[in-house]
Length: 234
Image (cartoon, rainbow, N blue to C red):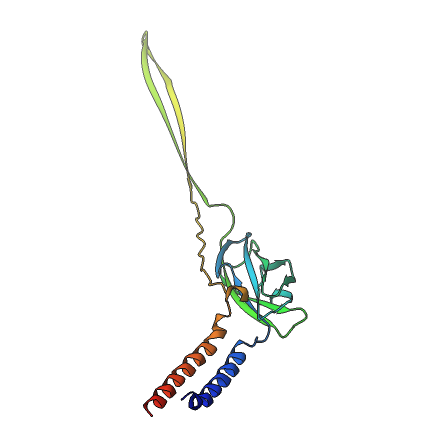
């Protein structure tokens, strides 16, 4: 029976080895890019800082330059450092500062963050982030002023012989000024959207590459089991 099993076993080992070697073969070097937040709020005249993480995939190693080409008027984007060094199976981080001018229009601004290899220019990824621009300046102040005054006058007539004399005496004059100040405070809430992190190959980020070999192994074992059962019945 062992001789009869020799050919199926040899074929199964050959197929399994070929599929395993093909499944574990490294792919093309690439990068995975993510921002620490998908959306941030900024007042007109202020700024917001994003952290852009560029993660090496399949052994990618190069300098990566980051840019934004679609920033509208009144919005300035700067990067530090730029380009950034991305070692193989590691990552490089870039601080992206988005500044809104005092006269920038309020509203949501979508920015396309492009990361591209300096030497390996064919490696390029785009990540979208949103900046919500609100009104700037000091909080509005409303002042209401109320003035009141009162005068008390007393008239007295005194007889002086045959001719009466009339006198007027002002007892008091009061003026009160009341000022009420109302201040409105603007509260800005930052919305944070968590992004999943794809780690380097040393942390099994490319575990999906094992899916095909494992599936092939299961199929081959099942075929061997069926063949052994069939031969035993003979």
